[in-house]
Image (cartoon, rainbow, N blue to C red; front, side, top):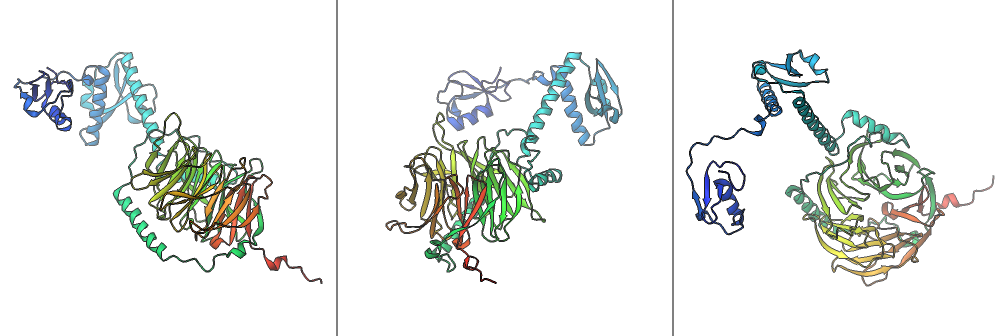
Length: 555
């Protein structure tokens, strides 16, 4: 007699009074508690319909492991290893070869490559019955398969485990040697499926407390007196131009500014990220390792940690070393298409990446582990990849833009899509939340759109360029007083209310000659603008130095 569910001989058999089917008691009771139906017929079933059966002592059939010589060898090996670990008897290596077994010393056995090795107590040697050569081959094949699976698992785990000292040294070489690519990129195995831990209740509590604290600060927020005035912005002109990237692959794709140290980071088409000290006018570090263009760069907190996303489908976490260079600590390979955006949470403990593979990932910064990977609920035959992403200043809302011209708002705690904004034409290229928490600015091929998050509606569109010129970047300054836009030129708007006009206070030409400004960021207190274009230069716009421009007296 066999259980209708497991196919094994039941220990406590019961019979279905309705259908006559035999079950293991614990299995059918669990199924009834869960579904209330028979797992075979699908008919309603209760515990009262089960009739227990008394049976004599059951002799279980021989297991699969003991039904063949390879299975017995595997069983002996496992038991022997277990006994060795528990200190049961002396263990000797046994060499199996052509129906014979021979005892060898450990060193000679371990260096041979044409045999099978088992570690087990010497008393078991007489129990081993050596099969023919084909049986040994089957065991070899099984061991090779287990070895390959273990290697794949270890390679996959390397993506989430901090690099060892040896690996770090190799990454350091690629990070500090300008233009040299990380040698270990192609040596790592492709990513496999991973289990996600999920965003735990402790993390949600941390995010909620951060949100409450920042919300209280916003109520008392005042415009800093050192903020650049509208009149000063109107006088901005190009102050300097810095060739940071390679001439054979020109193009600055992303900019971020560390306000506390006045360091500007750029990502380039040449697959490098450059950290530039504006005060000294010198390059602090060139970070190499990505194999395709760097699409997004982000500083974390005081700049000790730095993030880069790339079209090579990876994200890298860089850590500042004592000598001022940055070492690659983690290479994250959870996406299967280009990574388009990286955004850091206000706690500086977590960050999100958005990719054209139609998912965004929530990461723990310290470990580099992906806690959640969220896929959009779109038609699989027509997927819409993510092209932009940004956290709301309070950190409980995430905004994303898609290649299908849709802006999506997410609840970070539940990873639920709570709102969708349409109306754009073409992929959404940039997204920025105002510091006041009420306004959202988005850019796409057609225009810049301004959204009121309190009413979830578009209240103004800025149609700045012709139909053939996309808007590539949009960003609020840190005070929420100005809005910068980059397309065929660079424009700065004064932020107003929903009903008032948003006036353009300054238009700066794209001096790259490409007609395409790709990114713009405000410096501290909007004292300057950092602009990237499709040439290799970083350009700084600000107030002209009156003393430098004044004519020098003749000697």
